Image 1 (spheres, rainbow, N blue to C red):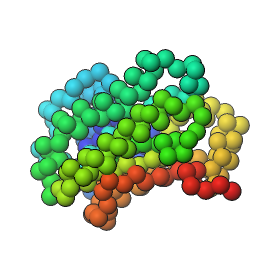
Image 2 (cartoon, helix red, strand yellow):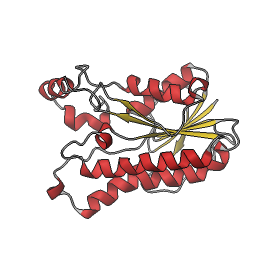
Image 3 (cartoon, one colour):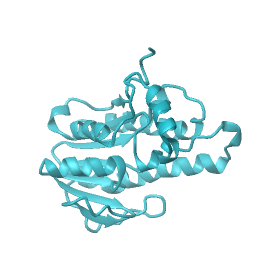
Length: 229
């Protein structure tokens, strides 16, 4: 399969790329920088926040597309400006829409393509200080359900909604051992998520084993979204 990752050079995206390469799939990563330890992926320089997607270098047929860029902008609502909401919407939602529109003709060339997007547990489970990111990710969930209905049966569209995962993006929230322990204890499974946890779910959604799934938001969150213990 031909798998394209937008912004997939670090954290969860890096794990997705590595798992897909190990499975024998061809992987293209469109991102600002590239982790050179990802052996076997083709890098296409791209800044989702600033640029339209240049299709040069992408495969003519795309079987799986994953949009990885995101933000963790956690502040009290009273401390947020309108520009903060616009910035979160731009990187999480509008840049994603531009990428999907640009690559949709190549997804349509696959017998059954899979599009995977990212939300957050905070959309379905109200959490303080998440108003901006929850608004942006909530837009993704609504978009995904509508697009899944429009693209069926040729293109499946699903969303993965993690809780706090140990990635470079979350490093400010996990800056010392106390914060790591406290955040782990908030989850019923008593640990932080790993990039591999999330990548494994994405891999499942890209594969034939999930071929009867579309329009779903799947929480991979250590039980945070549904359990109270």
